Image 1 (cartoon, one colour):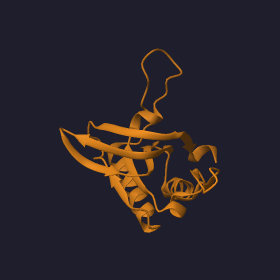
Image 2 (tube, one colour):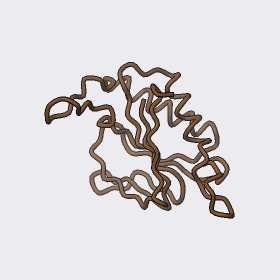
Image 3 (cartoon, helix red, strand yellow):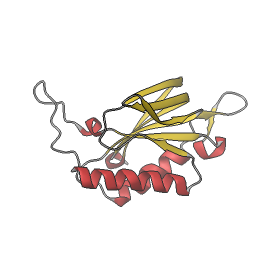
Image 4 (cartoon, helix red, strand yellow):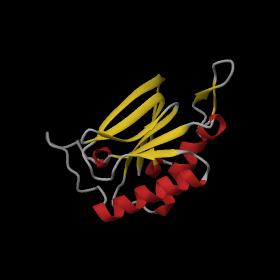
Length: 148
């Protein structure tokens, strides 16, 4: 499972002209699910996403986590993160989870993040979405549960 974490001052997602989720300061989490991913991958990435110290403290050091700051998360499914681009010019998505598995693990990620006290907004699994964000820093991390 791959999660791209972007520290933001604000972000939102729109589907067919309707805003489905928006946050002030916090994290945008773009989440890609491999067909080999399990609940263990979800738990690992939720733990990292909630507790990674990537927010500034009072002296400007990255020393606070999403939980420490009380920030929100905007979680967006993005199967293209698991695309294999190494061969040819067209990426292959054969490593992506089938929609049923991908949606189940995406929903579990959201539920577990909420279970830790994080306010979560979302897009819609599998939908074409327009995501707008203001990356704060910029600060972006790519987390891969298989490289833990």
